[in-house]
Length: 500
Image (cartoon, rainbow, N blue to C red; front, side, top):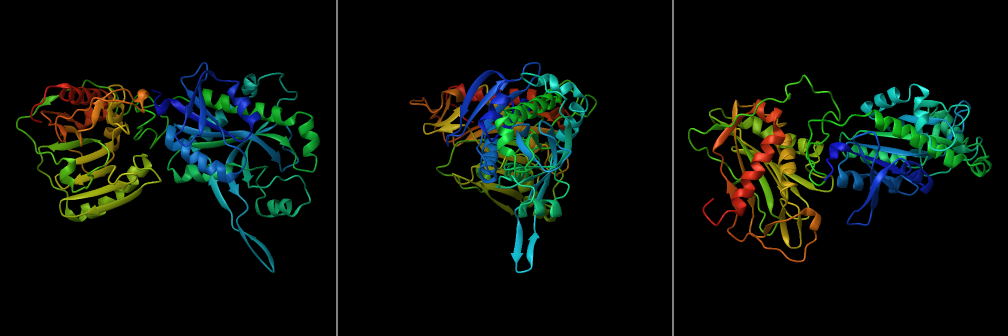
């Protein structure tokens, strides 16, 4: 599986834009979403990236819907929209490239007898991606990525705002042109998808996005003539080359490890940072035996009703010793923060309704999606942090994939470490599956399956903790800890029936 931290998504609207980017990719494979949305994913030679490429069609509405779908599905480290646009300024020439610093949705407004009053929406591009683009495109070296004949003179790159609406503008003296000059005077290009793209990315949380457009016409009544001269394919090739230069300059994060299916926390904070000298620097991992058993508040005790729901992986971090208590008044504040953390880390999707509660014992946030209580987060007054999330599943039941399981656990550990509660010195880790009756060890790649051999050894599977690690070790060795927890869970799953 491709780690989402090593995947970028490039979106396009037109076939020629799609082909311009596709020409740079190798080792292609096609992925099909359950709704039929298709992406081609390939390697970008000379980089560690896998680039997923999609053609969305024209218009902001479709771009918004499909941006949300693809980002929720593939969980990329970043999104780029690459294509062509019309110029709004005399000094922005055909063949030039615009990297959008802002996206205006210019069609919002109010009309009355006295005229039109603009009520725009605006989104800024990701600071991280914009800075990477400025560095990558500062010199003319990026043109080496242009496929075909090198243009003369060299196209210029402009970091300026772009206007996006569902109108093809091809007249400098039209009411729309006047509206853009009066109300969006700093916009240098106009196109039809980036407003939907930017809105969807904004609603998804801290997902880095950038629009890169090649200028194919001057929006001055001569679009047909410009198109006839091949300006669109050339502009698409220039935009693709600029995007490839930017991607080549990016370095994937080295501390994130999660699968494309369950990528909790993959890019929630800083998408790519040199962490060589941070507190998460790798160090020796030391497991210490527990002096005495600890009490774990398992998922079923959290008061969630999930009868008939999907089998869920549950993970619990229990402070050792459990001597400090979180004040009840602070628990009352925590349940709303759990929703925010879950949303930002894509643990809860935008399509899910989240309910949150707090009482004298715990604060909880639970997602109600296809199945009630399919995912959830809890903080107990004892300081225990808990998370549960469905296993990959089909109509035959849940799947324990030895390759996928450590990645899911690693993502959940990342999330739990972000809870706004005091960090104890040591923690014990409990892991389990509930309900476990229709779970089988298999490969996610084989789904959907026609037959299974379910566990059928009991109502649930629980691996109680018998060792502790420090919170510092957890931060520095999250993937190693996830591998160990996965091994313990699989060992108990494969063992003959006994008490758990």
